[in-house]
Length: 133
Image (cartoon, rainbow, N blue to C red; front, side, top):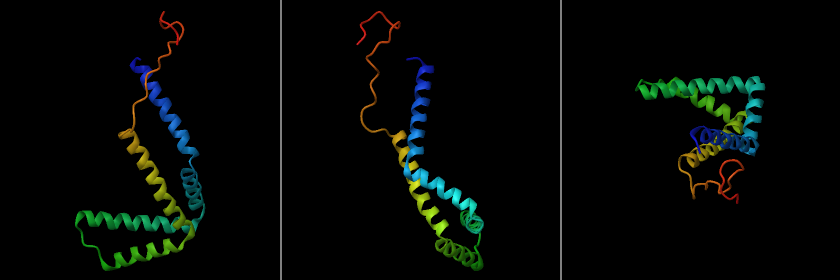
């Protein structure tokens, strides 16, 4: 098989995998909740605040910069409010399953299990004068 056919086959299989993922209930639910979160202004604003505060906290932590007591308290308050918000809490829980699924798929791609697929023994008409099986 030439390089172009191999690339086409890879893209075909990737597309098949994409379709399988799109049909998965975790992926479907994650997308539904992301849309629900986007439509709920209060939940979206709270989530944005939480992400901003978390990013700032992490940035300071990684840089070795002092984190003020008020910043820690604010982050804890945002985390607590987020846990109480049903849209955010369900979104975050589902997001963990979604990330886990994608991580496992990536691992399976990087380290495939079992025997590799065998090249077909079938010879298509016109390719060769050999016997068609």
